[in-house]
Length: 198
Image (cartoon, rainbow, N blue to C red; front, top):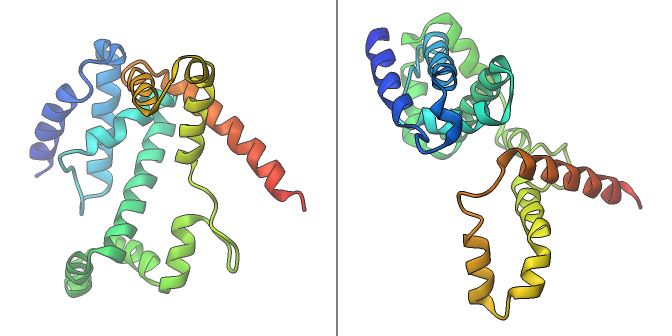
């Protein structure tokens, strides 16, 4: 099974974001393959599934350190597991019914997810403390950073909704992801400072 996972992940790695300059270097493809292979080895219950390379790719591109990219990917996979347990009852039942077949390591991980009640799981997912409003997702600040960067062009050239759509469509494929994420984090920090003031 491990060889099959390595073979399939190797095929997907070669197809992942192949049009990007970042993946013209074989060492970057190697990083992606390494992370997926290590994850498949560590989480034998999941192994490798098609599409995991697409989830991992942005992390490798944005984070300079391969270890950071791996742990970020591992955390994403855990969150996806929580989401699946919460929102896909069939998958949840498979895990409930086959608990006696799971290894001790897997049981501990599933218990750590399942021991939370629905309310606590909701708070874990959105980062809110009990009784607080959930924080705004970082994706809102990412969109805001792109709009802020393009605001001069939008104000000068856009005469209607069609022009706005055209200008924003031109961003597709031309966006510096690292720069946009840094700008989003700055906006988020600014928002948090203002939100804390009474």
